[in-house]
Length: 144
Image 1 (cartoon, rainbow, N blue to C red):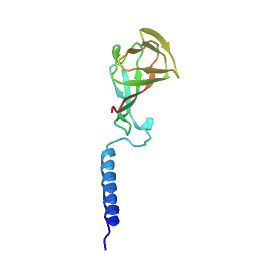
Image 2: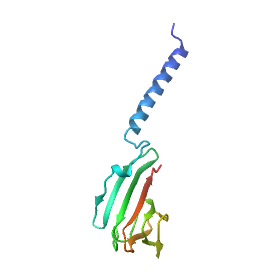
Image 3: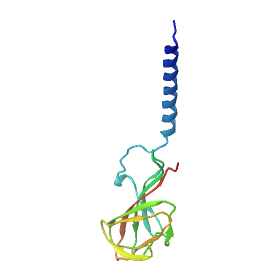
Image 4: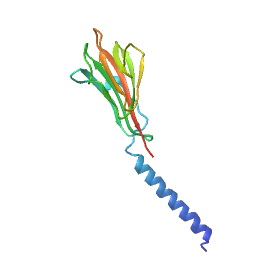
């Protein structure tokens, strides 16, 4: 004989199963843990040097995550100073950058980390005699 308890347990099991399926379908397009090997991502030429696009897309906690490495030729800038609609980190790998942040220009070298805030004017330029390579990690959070 089927009891009310049996029906409740079966209903709960069906609900949990459907919830898990819906959740799995929702996260299938999201970036999972991965390794991005420098040597397997060839640089793409740009007007100011080159860029290695590691990843750009949604993750479980971010609407968008953009990770790339740019190389600037001497005297070049990737673009004029501008304001971002996201936040990002710039980490200098090699060379010297001239950085415009908060209305002030500074020179930074290897190991330096720049935080670029939302909607704040910023810009970078290679002011040295050699190429500059830097990592960029930009993100946009989910908004509730």
